[in-house]
Length: 104
Image (tube, rainbow, N blue to C red; front, side, top):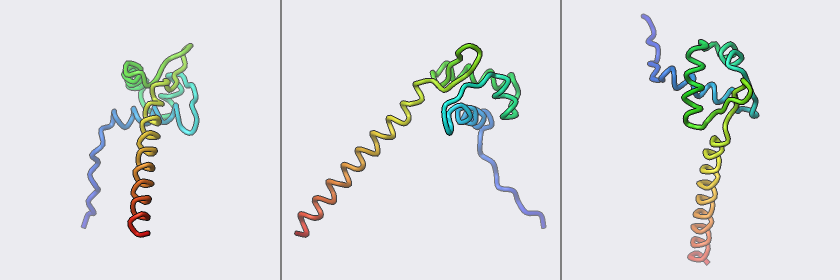
């Protein structure tokens, strides 16, 4: 009996875009040429170029002297996450304080 493969619900172009962002920004920000990105990630040059131009339009990457890099706008994600964590910590501290006061 043939085993069923799990369905892949991913969208290839979105996966490629995230892969490109990760290549440029994890573990540290680096600059890569279009050719370096396409070759390293095994994505066609045409698709890589179109993804980069789309990400550039959204200010997530930028091209400087023929090299692509993560744009400063990407830090908005981490800033938003930091604010969320800080608010959550404050909420948990308040709940803990209320709990201690009730049980004192």
